[in-house]
Length: 433
Image (cartoon, rainbow, N blue to C red; front, side):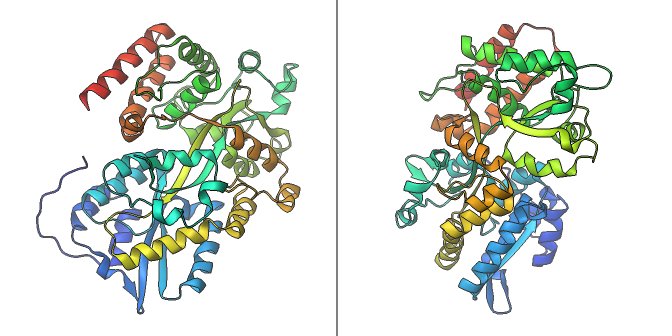
């Protein structure tokens, strides 16, 4: 259940005030003030305005695709205007959750895909089953589209599924006579040899963050284990999971302490970190490395037994929109799924598109790494829970796993002991829900 608000009359803000408040991250203040701001206000120059907040609006890579898509949609639907604007990622889900709880939902809903099941479980998303049957999405999309399903119904369209890659500094590897590692043990041994004198062999998120879950789970799933089973039970204390947790812990020992993802990335780009794991989207950041470091930076297959993969972001129709707005949002989503716009997605974002066959020879010629990214995405095993109940409660599960990651970083307790505690916490969370 989302936050509750007192039903106190408030001044009705203009649409500009709403955007300003949200963009500044004033979610709590804006949430109560926006109760009653209905869809009927979202018009401009006689056109229906579809409000579309997104953390990608300010991203130099992904925003290009969105802006081109919006321009094409405007030609297809001249009666519609799309109000595309940015919100900070760190508070994005919290702000959108507050708006839904206040019954002031945007029209086009962009979500981190791992949160989609939670929104669907609260009744906040419109099922897309009947609409998707009129498309070829079911037959052409990545299998990771399954993450959009709840109770056998799809509630969104996945925009990016990926496999983890190993980004590395070849000069630092050569400094210790190492090659690109092909196993986790090789990666850890190489990292141990490099760490010292202000340089770290491995980079990871070592301060509390939602990324603690993804980085920890990548080691567990990559080694053949799992934190969550499809039958609704947890397996954090299984032998395979404990082995993955221990490798993760040993890798973390070669990483800087107390850093967030962006700090990790900056240290890698300045030559202070030798290796890190991330998705294909990190490739675009390599251009920001110094001229001294950039020639040494490259990417390879992550050195796991199987490819750990994730779902990045997805697009949805909020429940409760009137029929006209619902159709307009669907028209926008459907345009995004077409072969032409999926190919354009690959070209502009340098990421694998979910539609099979979107990787063109021209795109590969410009960015050879795309072939690796596509192969990894095709093989990827999701690091997120498969069980429906676990997916609906992912926020709580993620918090518990992140706390376990902190214990692995900061305490001397045995890995098996931390895994046993993690198992108990997960079981209790499920029982108390």
